Figure 1: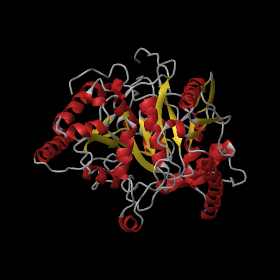
Figure 2: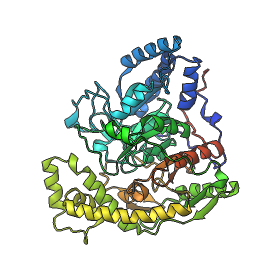
Figure 3: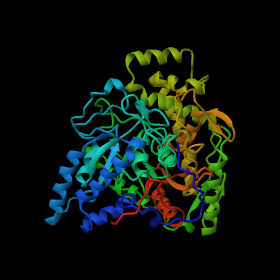
Figure 4: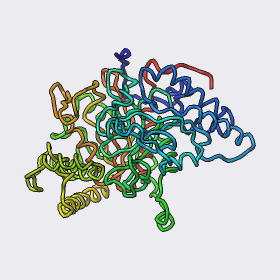
Length: 506
């Protein structure tokens, strides 16, 4: 089931084209309207809730709903604004968050039936910061079981569909987040990412997303059971319909907690460049291990041509000197290790049996995660050392270049599948490849704690969105976001999916 495909080109699209409906405006503009009282908090909330009633039955993105509580908060914030109070930098913006974050009084299940009744008693740290900044959080968005798939479907909440094609995945694990934004059902979103879980959905649904540098945003409260440890590689970060929305959200959620915040306040370096013509970028469009579909490659090549025309330095194929398959195996092994603390004793025993006989010298892609989950601490230290040595290649690379541009994933959104990711095949350039190989593009920079933004750059011939992954140096988040903003202003802004936009008066 899909709308008629719309032919798209790589020519610049202005932000005005994305604002036929109030619901599609950027969070930044909505905040300006709220602050100036051009629109009320409750009025804007009701606009989104009406759209949810109309459009969400077909998409199934917002699966936990706090509408009565949100209406009470909106009315209260309207009263505060009327009395001239400063209610924070989000100023009553209605927004949603990924289901995997704790929101007091709501279930946090991660799509797992055994956690159906796991009701949060406190807010996640990032959620608390958003609320303190004046956000009205009116719901939570869908995820895959245990946040482990490139689509968002589970036994508790059902399947989320991509607004660009209801027969295709919106991505995962922040799939409900991106689908809700693309369909104009929310003003801003909070997601998480260890294996492209922000970048994948942003790419599939044609929105913006940012995977921050590891460690700059607190993970507390993004868990099924309370833990004080941060998960290796994993991050939390924003999704929005504009790069400016990502900057706004990051400014709110970033920064350490407690004594560490007092000792080491966060101060990210300013963007390296402010104009496209001054950027030095490497452009990678394909990889022998993680083959990229021609429709995605064409959009990346078109972007490269545009950047050259703007005066930017574009080096096609330049990249750190790292072996792709070995990099992927290392990434999948470390992912398995990162997730091991969440395993039950029974699950751990099963994985240990699966990885029996595997060593660092003989590890294979198919069992890398099982091996990683059952590593000895000594072996993990060896892998971490390997990662750090590779990381030096990235640091040297970013002395020559400001950014590396590459695909977020190998294809545009794929059709819904009931085959487990480990057995699933993906159609790339007319032939089948292993679905999970495309996670190479997630680990390429993510394993080394590097920031990465995703911005929309065009459409396939079938009318499906394509994004570009913008990888920067560690703590170079503002450089990534500045580049994404320049693309939005000069190349392509967010475009609403056909059938979801209708013109209304602001």
